[in-house]
Image (cartoon, rainbow, N blue to C red; front, side, top):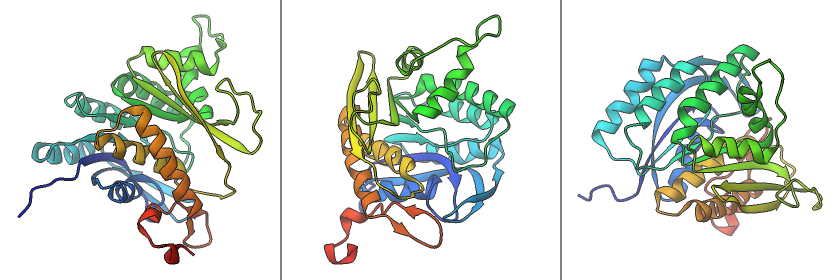
Length: 287
């Protein structure tokens, strides 16, 4: 009997019955990319391929116990943290991950698909993520809109006035906290500064300590999709678990995600779900 040979990845996230987002989607992407995924469930969702109607938080102690028991038995090649729903979960997961600083951590903590918390709860959650998880992250992935919302937690001055910031200055703030790389997704195509000179394209920009590392523009696909961002962050995690460095993993994960979206499938009456196994199917199967 052979021992485990494919890299093990532990993913923290919600359980989605449709498998379009959350840990089920992560496990599919990990498997498609020759990794073995394990899951810590942070919330139970009620929803389909069109919308999420409700969610039930998992008690933070249960979240911690799920992870601790698995980690006492197995060694992870990488970790992924997806969308979280409360600050207690953030604290519990941050404490656990602090014991495994040598394994890459991909942090993709926001999801527009989940019900939005109140403004006060959202600010507390964003602050906890910034203070506890961002400093431990190998790579933080978020959209330009999500970056702006996260930045609101540090832009307020001592007199209550808002401090102006740019995308670059916001990224620099996150890198200064200890995060090694920041990948900003869904910016207009064109230059890294946001010049929308390439019509109908969206770009992903990778930042590191020395500034922009890569700026990749992709043709916009009509969709509508659900789970596109989670597919990208899961693929990133898988490629890093297999030994790729961050720029290499970002490039490979983008190629994989574009393919998954190009071959996306509509399960029911809702949005298109990325086909995470597209590259393992024959041409006839994809027609």
